[in-house]
Every structure is written in C-alpha cells, then in structure tokens.
Length: 470
Ligand code: GAP
Image (tube, rainbow, N blue to C red):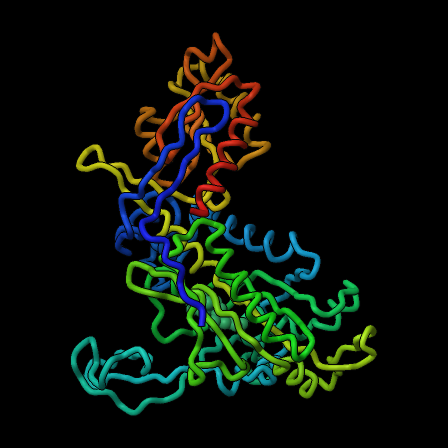
C-alpha cells in the first residue's frame, strides 16, 4: 500500500540567480487551500474557463477554456506527452478518431456494463447516482427514492443521414480502446518489441448522472492515457513502476506532496477489466478526488478484441521464441482534472485588504505564460524597444505583451494568471539597453542587459523548476 508523503509546511525555496548578489530566500505560501467559488470566479475573471454557451444561459456542466486556460491545459498535455512519449524509447503515440466501430464497445464491455446505479426522487424527481447519496432520502427535498436502475453512460449518435439502429455509433467513453484495436498496426509499423506502450491524448464523453465540481466531472472531457504492453508475469512490476511514475509526475510539476496520495482500490471497486488499480488523488477544495487511475488490465482487452474481430492479437517474442497475448498496464489521467488541480494548488494570497495580492504559483512549464513584457508607459518612445524585447523573447518562451493600465495593475494581473517573470522596459532602457526582471514569487527586481536577457530568464526559470519540486 502506497502512502502519501507528508512534506509538512510547504516551503518554496527561491535561490537568487547567479547574476544577482542576493542570498537564498525562502517564500512561504500563505494559504493551504482555497474555496471552489474563489477558483471559479478567478477562472472567469482572468480568462481561464467560461461557462459554455453563456450568452444563451449556459449549458450545465460544460465549460470552455479561454485564452489563458487554453495555454494552461495545453502545457499540462505537453508536459505529459514529453514525459510519457518524447523522453522515452519504449512509448509511441497515436491520435485516433472519437468514433469507432460499435463492436469495439461490445467487446470492451461498455455496451453491456458501463453503467451507474441511478435513483430518482419520488417527489422532486431529481436523479442521483445511488452510490453518491447517503441514506435513502433525497438530498434535495428529503423525499424517498424509487428503485435503483442501471443507467448506461455511453453517449449515442447516428452516422449518416438516417437515424436508425444500424447507424448508431458512440462517442468514445475512453481513449484506451483505440490503442488496443491498433495494437498490431502500431507494433509492426514502429517495430517496437514488448515491453512498449501506446499513448494518446483526446476527448472522451460520458453521460454522467451527476456531473459537477466545475471541470472535475463533466460529460465531455480530455484524457491522457497510455497502454503499456508487457509479458505476462512482469505485469505486477510494471504496475508498481507506473504507479510511482504517475505520482512522481505530479510532484515534478509542483503539486504539493501533502495534497497528493496514491489510493489502492479495494477488490469490490475494481473495474471489470482490472486485476489491480490505484488512483492518484488530490485534495481539492471539496475533498480528495481522483486525478488518474493506474490499472493492471491483464490480457482482457486484447483477448476480447481478438475474439470479437476474429483477428489474432497475440505477439511473437522472438527472443524467447514463444507467442503470448500481452498484459497491459494503463496509466489513465484526466487533462481537465489535472489542469484544475494545478490551478487549485497554485492559488495563493499575500497581505490583507487593499494590499492583498492574489498569486498563482505555477511551475514554469505549467504556467500559461512564462514571461510578460511590460513597457512602463504606453508612450511611443518606449514601444519600439519594448516590441523588440518582446520579439526576442517570444522565440524562446510563451509570452504576453501588455501595455494597458498602470504598471502596478499589470503586475497584479500577471500574478493572477501565474506568469513567473515580468520584464519591464522603462525610460532608462533607452540609455542603458537594460530592462528589469520582476520575480512573481519574491517580487525581487533585477536589472539585466538586453543582450543577456534570454539566458538570465532561462536561469531563473530553471531555478523555479527546481524549487517547485520542494
Ligand atoms: N481507460 C480507463 C479510464 O478511462 P477512468 O478512471 O474512468 O479510467 C481516467 O478515467 C481519468 O479520466 C480519470 O482519472 C479522470 O481524471 C478522467 N475522467 C474520467 N471521467 C471524467 C469526467 N466525467 N470528467 C472529467 N474527467 C474525467
């Protein structure tokens, strides 16, 4: 059984970069957590996440990422893809279609068994997942429930112009099945030998009975999944490996250790395909919630697809000179949930009243923007130099240019979207060709020659990467 590592009070160490003379500084977080309402309101105010179709009154539990949120979520996906695919020799990627042959969902067991127990209140007729209500009275009005029935979570649509049963297809409820049905295509074209994995990032859909908690549980969401094919008998070790890998990944990108844990599933909560599963959980404002499930799916899926399709999906191990159906270990992560966890974890407040500063302490690779370029004034005299600095930096970093409102308000705005560094171009810049870098966490300001700016920023971001791991 894995235990959460307790890190005690979270201290973020900020070591001054070598080109300043400052000593090591310790920045203590002020907050241990915040409310969901605070996050939802910040997300709207600063362009992270909006309610879908808001001008029509919104569509319940469906969300759109704005200009800042799209960068955050893209960074989460890029960081995962880099760690799981690009930095490894034993994992390759695919990008499969959302729509698949309906028999896929027969073989996978989703058509028959992908359901939750639903209960309906006899009085107010609200519907709940039976396993999410305590006792047998409606949490909305206190009424009694009718008998529970199984509700299938697959979302249906029709392919082609005729809405008939023969044209029914399903929006995939997980990305995983495309990796199983493409196993042979990928293995033969990539010439990978077992053990190896196939990864994919993409949309999935589930007709959840009770979506909620902002982007935590929605009906349309994005998953980052990897199916790792291995020799039977080595699967337990690989399961251990990928559980540790997953937990370490969240720590690497700065989630606080004391808010993360790995929870091993009891045997009665295992999905039908799994021999063993564990969840990486994060302590959200409403309590602990799953970010990722790492399952030992055995040879269930490859065997099921072999049987249904008639295609042999076994593998010939040319070292051992034997044929077997590979076992599969699957780390399955939610991109939206992870982005929400990074947002919740980054949120901090400093000071009080009018002096209060909201700051998102994102890891530099997760922060929507790494650098903001801010000319001190909007005057034409500064603009050409500020634009020159911006075009220099945007080749290397994800940047924002902001020349509206007072410099103080612009710093606050960048703090609220978690930009690690602000580069200010002032009137002295015109004489000394130097700019000021302001650090989001320490608010320390240092003067740097423009010719050294890129490397100075690189050094500071590298230090922030190290500090984010605690
Ligand atoms: N292929 C296995 C699988 O899909 P899962 O635990 O059902 O496993 C994996 O889903 C991850 O996908 C979850 O840990 C969660 O992060 C994300 N996820 C699942 N359902 C979701 C929903 N309704 N809304 C947002 N994210 C969801």
